[in-house]
Each structure stands twice: as C-alpha cells, then as structure tokens.
Length: 96
Image (tube, rainbow, N blue to C red; front, side, top):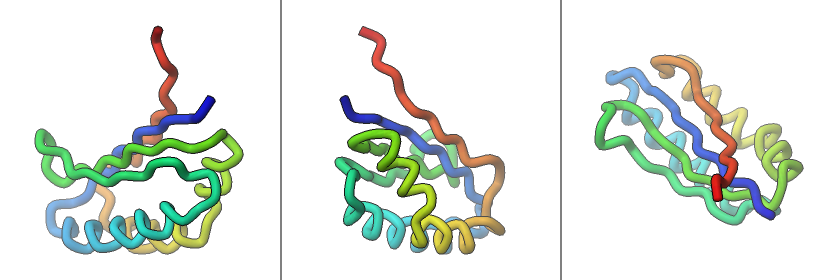
C-alpha cells in the first residue's frame, strides 16, 4: 500500500514569488525520484501565501529518502527565510 502525504508551507507575503520558483524546482526534481508516485504543488485559495503539496510515495522509505535529498535541502535554503510559520507534514491514513 502506498503512502499519501499532504504538506502545508506558509510563506511570508513578500516572499511568495521566491517560494513559488523554489517549489517549482523542487517539484520537477522530486517527480524524478525513485518511489515518487505523485507530487503536485498548489497554492491555497483560502489562505494567502500557503502552498500545499499532495504526494504519494511507494512506501515510508521512499519518503524518508526524499526528505534527505539534495533538492529538499536546496529548497529549504531558499524557503527558510521566507517561512511564515511551521511546515506541516501530514501522512494520511485511510478511514474506510
């Protein structure tokens, strides 16, 4: 069974353009990772400056490898000073 994750990334209003560019680069690199089944980026229509990733990974090991990847480090080098709060990582559990 695959692992689905939602991440929320709150960005300061004056840094949204920088964040958008860094996140687009992150998405392109992440989609090439082994174990990545889906990695989509959205901007919230309800909360200005909040970006959301919708992710699906083959398993926890693939997600763990992603979190240690160079492109995550590069993205957070740009995003670190632009964050307007904590990044929320939400692994999802099906409720059937």
